[in-house]
Length: 195
Image 1 (cartoon, rainbow, N blue to C red):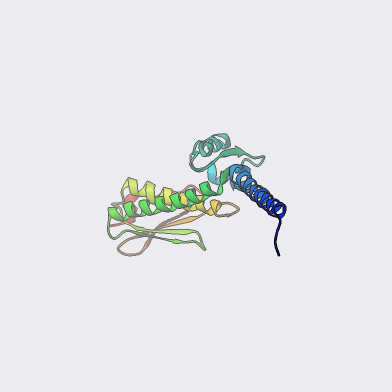
Image 2 (image 1 turned 45 degrees about the vertical axis):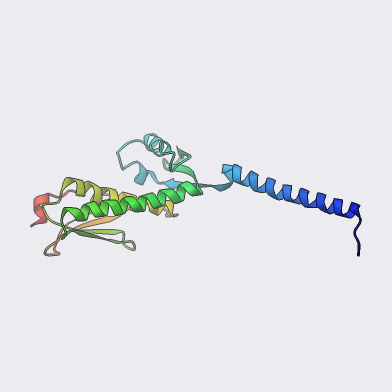
């Protein structure tokens, strides 16, 4: 079967048109950020309590992090609704994992006997420490690590309040020295943690 020049021309034109339609659709999808945006809601109980600020201040704090968020606003419940691309979401989760690892290493550097465990099922952070615990470790490990786990909880689709428990054990005796939950204010004295 021999095709005429006209058939070849129509076939070539059809290929060009189909190629353009496919490319134009891809380019529109690629260039339209609305196509791959994700919303993550951080309850006010999580986002606002971090600095004891207002919901508006918390939304501004989120929005001022362009590496992670395109926008953030307060909804009618006072929760923070963030908008981000899929890339920003993945970057944020991975950055938080790296920060957790950094804080863990800093915590362990304080004393080779120190350790911490996290039970995701019960949301319990167990820290094995003693009275020589430094302020930096306290803020990094006991403050920042649970917050980063909580942030990733929401980024990975978690719903509801992020309430966790912290249990402090003496690193030499494994005896429980203090316990508290994130939804209630609790304190401890370093000297009560033992040697």
